[in-house]
Image (cartoon, rainbow, N blue to C red; front, side):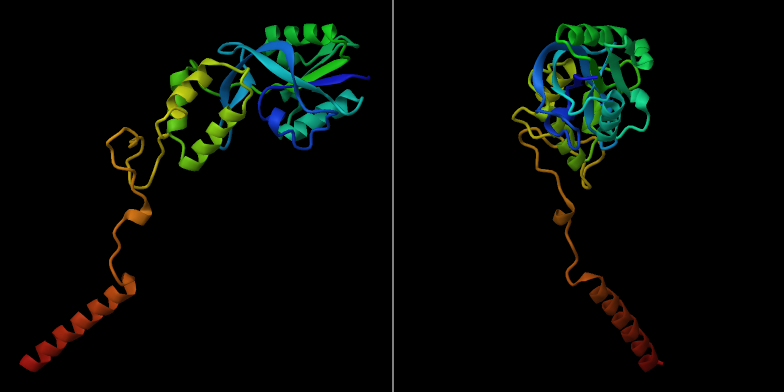
Amino acid sequence: MDRIAIIGWGSLIWAPGDLAVQYPFQPTDLCLNLEFARRAGDGRLTLVLDPVNGVPCQVHATRYDGENLNEAIRNLRYRERVRSKEWIGYVNLKAGKRRAEAFEYDPDNVLAIEEWGRRHNWDAVIWTALRSNFPSPYTPDAAIRHLEALWPHELHKALDYVRNTPPQVKTPVRAAVEARFMSHRAPPSRDFASPQGVTRTEPGHAPPLSLADVPKRKGGPLVWVIALIAAAAFACLRFHLGS
């Protein structure tokens, strides 16, 4: 097998890691139904093929630096840190084979990939076939509520992922995230001084407190312990002198 394409749309484009490719990912004339519909372990909303909520978006592709389809699938699986090979979709255009699980879940996207591969004379095409893990129905409001519940460092990473995603990827969730968090208002965050879910981002509100703002007793706990012992000793002395 000679020519193997790798399709990408998320972090694979700007952070391929150890993925063996002949050149950086480039925009293509292929559009697939995508949405920020998968919750990563670190809180990010990542892009996945979504036959229910996805909208047509231009994707990127590159050429695998090798000729063995099984090795290409294994290389992408390691990069994506997925244990099962079923989460790496493929179409083998020479043998007329495809990943059955990917086709059963999302036939329209798989057929579009096959047609694109034939049109551009690829022998095989592979991609990440992870799915949405949000409960249905998934809406932009549900995505915003998820992000608002993140800790500040988690929210920062989640927003970086959206910012780094190519501008050709325009989805309802991306539009909602950009309107909520990437306008002139500061993004909300959970902090130790505020009740969960309460934010102070509107004009006129005081900035959120942090642990550094909490008043501390001068001298620290050791001084207070010594003071209590001294007070008890003084009370005992007065008792003995008076008796």
